[in-house]
Figure 1 (cartoon, rainbow, N blue to C red):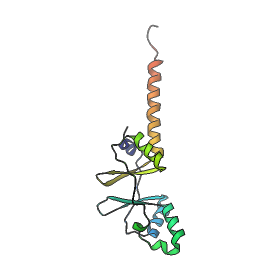
Figure 2 (figure 1 turned 90 degrees about the vertical axis):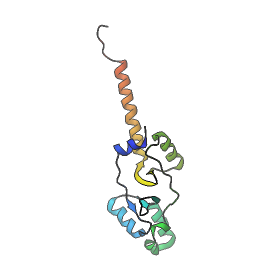
Figure 3 (figure 1 turned 180 degrees about the horizontal axis):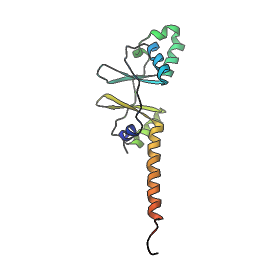
Length: 147
């Protein structure tokens, strides 16, 4: 099963920001949309980083009130683990576990196409396993004709 299937079953709105947006701007978007992670993309929609509530809290704790005027390019995580829509769910989940992350941007040809959440990927695998089990049970315990 591939990541594309998860994106189809669980389409997630992605909050996109520019590297030039300020910390205050994205913090306002986090509050408005009840989201804690933004994808930072350039003008061609290529992913250049991510910024989280944790990143904002860290920079405010470090730099004080002036931090809200900083551009995201100064506070974002630019070395971002991503996945492809064609990758297997199990492979991506292992990378998420190894990296201790709950979300991965999905990138195709360098462009952001979505975001995958760990629990959504696990739900797709669970649903498939439940379907396989139901089919097996129906096969084994099928009510047959004469015997």
